[in-house]
Image 1 (cartoon, one colour):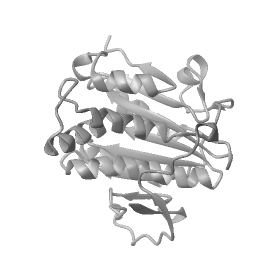
Image 2 (cartoon, one colour; image 1 turned 90 degrees about the vertical axis):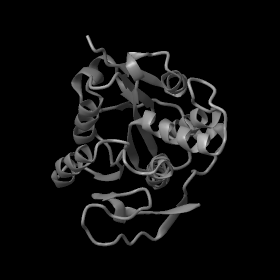
Image 3 (spheres, one colour; image 1 turned 60 degrees about the horizontal axis):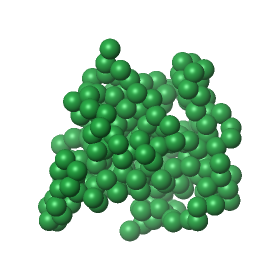
Image 4 (cartoon, helix red, strand yellow; image 1 turned 180 degrees about the vertical axis):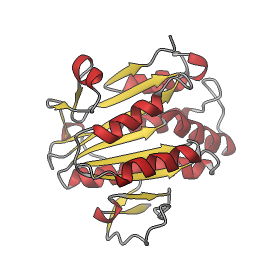
Length: 249
């Protein structure tokens, strides 16, 4: 299916269906973009050459990101992924920031929106939020919708920062859907299609050789029980261009 995208989304918070959740007026988006993205040849992805200022000095200095890179932030529960993501969202240098808050607490969503929407920072921010108590198909769709919004801005030649918190919740949603459809649980109960969904979402970020735009992706991954051999962590780490592990110690 196709979703509505466009400049009207800037500085707005929407749900998985594109309906505003910030109490503002209805969105007038003219352009459409395929929810699953447009498949392109491998050579359409330009290489990562320019450094990306993520706004966190420790990362800029010691683990410098590149424009168009896909970076994973891997940590156990309560170690500080969301706080780090929040800092990056507020300080990174990007034309547009698209933040997908999936499977988070509703309070975290309202905090994030109130903090980042009001600040007169460079560029615009779009928030796509589906809290933990929503249906799995909406949680999965929210991730795809955020990717579609980021891709549409990249097509316009913009440098986009796509933040997805958290990729693990997307995998959980895909697992729920696959199990309902009768797929067998293979790796720790994750059906093959759930792990493939992660790969597809991460692969949508990157540089565009044609438009000159870029989607720099930052994805948080929850290491369940601090286990770095968890299937989701393993699958994600294999497709990321780099990852940062936050230690509980």
